[in-house]
Image 1 (cartoon, rainbow, N blue to C red):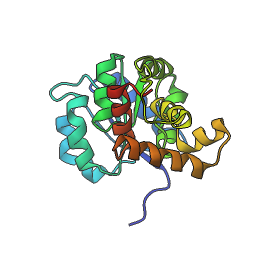
Image 2: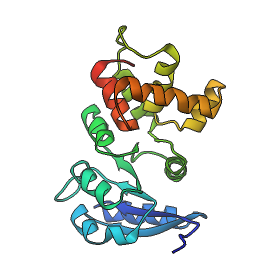
Image 3: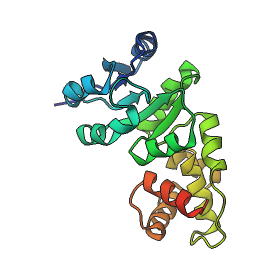
Image 4: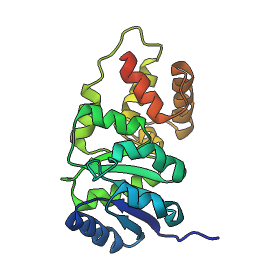
Length: 210
């Protein structure tokens, strides 16, 4: 069956005012469509697979199962859905748990509305959007291990990945071809013995490679 051309978005947020606000904002933006809204993960588990959203906006602090705890099950139910955390929490541990559990972006609720909409588009393009303060925290949590197996360029690219930039944007900012970026990322994955962006970030943090 042919999918809608609009980006389909589901929201899991227990605060009704915030939930309806996001739904109104996104639903009234051309090119975007609200697939469903839920007040808890337990409610979402029952129907969300049938909703088939492209992007899921997920709160952390929820009644019952938290957003972080729900991530593995949500990824199993929605293997092709991009999950963005949208929360008031900025603790380093939560951020890395979210990214390690499969979230592809981490935004705080003071993010301007237009940035939330652009983040949805960015994650669809392969990026991992983060609020500026979150990106700074991620970078500052890394202290370079001088025995890193990564080259200077690979380290630079992994730092860019850690702040949520897409491969295309990295290529543009470093003035290199997209295929070159892909080649560097493949080498990074091989050297770190990982198979995903989240695992690469975790390995970099654990080993202090960036």
